[in-house]
Amino acid sequence: MSYEISGPPLISPWMMLSMSEARTDIDETKIVIPGQPVCDAPQQFMRGHGTYTRDGEIVSSLSGVVQQLNRLLMVKTIKQRYAGEVGDVVVARVVEVQSKRWKCDVTSRLHANLPLGSVLLPGGDFRRKDVEDEEKMSEFLKKGELICAEVQQVQHDGTLMLHTRNNKYGKLQQGIMIKVPPHLIKKSKKHFHTLPYGMAVIIGCNGNVWVTPSLPETTVEEDGSHITEFQERSKDVAHKEVSFENMYFQKVPQDVRLAMIRVAACIRLLRDYSIAIFLNSLTTCYEMSQPYDIKELSEQDTSSRLAYLIAARLMQEFSSQN
Amino acid sequence: MEVQISDDEKLFLIHGVESDLRNDGRSCEDFRPMILERGVLSGTNGSCRVQLGQTTDVLAGIKLELESFDTIAYPKPRQPIYFHVDFTANASTQFAGKGGDQYGEEVAAAFHAAYSRSLDFIPNLSKTLVAEGYRWKINMDVSILQWAGSFPDAISLAVIGALSDLEIPEVEVAPDDGGKVSVVLKRPRHGGNMRDEEVPVEMWKLDVTKCPLLLTVSKIGTANLVDCCPEEESCIRAQLLVGISQNPEEEKYDVTCVKQLGGGLLEMESVLEMIELAQKATKGIYEALAKRLKTEERRKPGHSFLL
Image (tube, rainbow over all chains, first blue to last red; front, side):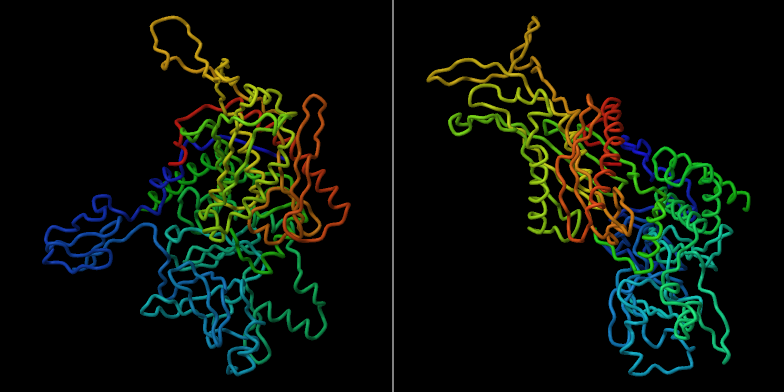
């Protein structure tokens, strides 16, 4: 039983920003504010996003950093809505079930689409989707459920088309989801990480981080198709080997739960102090948080002290690599 | 703030709560870290801002009014604190326009009921009756800036904080024409060449050690918890609002009101267990609150809003 009533913080979290890796690729001489001219010789350059012409000059319309790509000048802001790219792995929540597709919230400007033809249904993807499948869409994924998917295509208006045509994607079950601003997620090759503490993490490029007891595992069927663990268990229920309650109401073991909650607290700490979230920062944060109780990690003094140490350690590792 | 979570997430949460391990590492009896700051609004007579866990944010401000009333219509002393609770659209989109008015009135009514005997538990409150037919009316306005669970707890802390920050001017009562009296602010002269208006007015403060706290206790699965965050609130079976006031001399915690928020069924045993939990939690909060009120260092008004 702990009750703490304290005063407002003396250090605000953004003061930590200067030490985080999210800012290593920003050149401070090119920071502009709205209305500021972006270059000296406007005839040589083409203007891109975030700029407009005024009196023959290329002027910025946003607060951000000037980026130059050959002859294209554009202004990129630090904090912005997630804009998807092909190949990104996202963690999304279903908001609507429509005919032949699901609408999902990826915290972008528009909801993403997951067409019925792009999901891996039980029985493998050799099946064609028929009218029965269309009626049973709600049984597979209903409103409010979480999925892990990959971006297949970006439409011209920015809508993302997702797919789960792989056994590592699909419906997510027990776990904790934490929302993080998308600019703190570094682009990396791997998004699925099994941590050495008994649980796994999916770092979605759109800022949703999913902490789960285990990643979707696969088993090979007799006819050679792959099905997920969930689908295997539903087969067991159909064959009355496992009771309904045992399949759906499996309780996560206590030590796994503790590890998951600690990792979730670490992610929140990294988010509040604007430190980029990737495998290395998570494991560093987890190890350095061991001496503290999990609930202490949300208190001001402990978290600010810890965040400072973590940022220092990450900067050290980064500079020793270069 | 309404959050939507999937059935499996809810299952994970409920299992955790039943083993006394919530998703943020707290036990069922722990509160989120609270921030209390007084003197944040320089245009009020007393103000307080309370944040619960960086999301629920409540602002309370007091304005004093010298009211003249008819002694025949109101012969008995009435309690002078009037509450108005405003749910702003900032807190949740459902409160845009007039959406928040009804909810605000319900909460204000709960506080009116809890403070109906304020003349008993705030010893020097009777001093607000300055003369026959004249009294200080304490208008307490509470504004919900952000809503993420447990707002009655935050409001009750903010109300106590604002009442402890309130400074009421001392007055001198002099007889006037027609049987009436004139009420004048008391400025004690210490000699010297100061003009009347420049001498600071003498102020007095209220003693708030016995003010009641209103806590929300929720039931998730078989466990009882205090201070739920929005994800937990979407899994609750039932929620009670329990008003508790402390009696420090006798070490007792009296339950002043029990109200059910929202729907759900509860057995009598559960209700008793939940009230017990509220009493246990109140003890800890009162101690933390007293410590904070004593050790607070004042900052520039409104400074923390910029952080």
